[in-house]
Image (cartoon, rainbow over all chains, first blue to last red; front, top):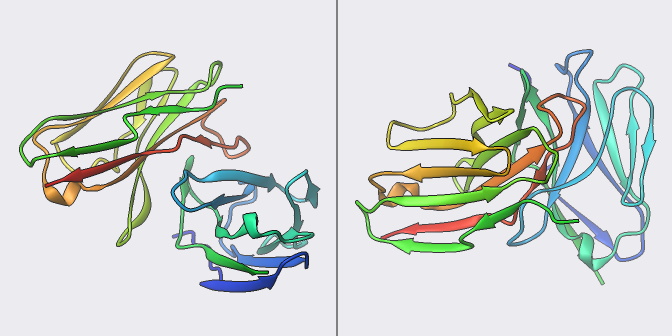
Length: 108
Length: 115
């Protein structure tokens, strides 16, 4: 079965960069790599996705390994509002599978 | 732009009662997903629709759960009869199409408590 692995938790200081890793060694060649985050008492929020090339948007950057077996979500300057659970998404057919994610704490 | 709208935000009811959760997807989106989130099992996909047609309901826990999408702008998830173990946060999401390259956009969820 396809599976992603992420650290259970990470900590960052405010205004410092954060690198959130994910291993997805069994991802198929045509599945996009998606990242979502969930703030307390809210629904998951789309962050970024990509296939092979690194991607940037207003929220974050996504660095994808050349072999696609891992990726890193980069928050360039963490703020207190970035404290959330970050999910690297697995796929089962067309279905998204959410694992336990990484709980990011941001310290002032 | 309006996002995915779910109602009610909170529902408390007694076991045995019928519960209906509602979802309005983002206009123009052709795929709709229902998820359930609990502490024990995390976020699980229950069912999804493409163009109002149920495609995969393998995540629906049992026959007490049913979902419908009568038109492109409305879907319901019904539990009848409800049980305490159904207590969870239920999320609805929509996307342009159910495909790997399309992000899903989630509503704020319905927090359901069955007493």
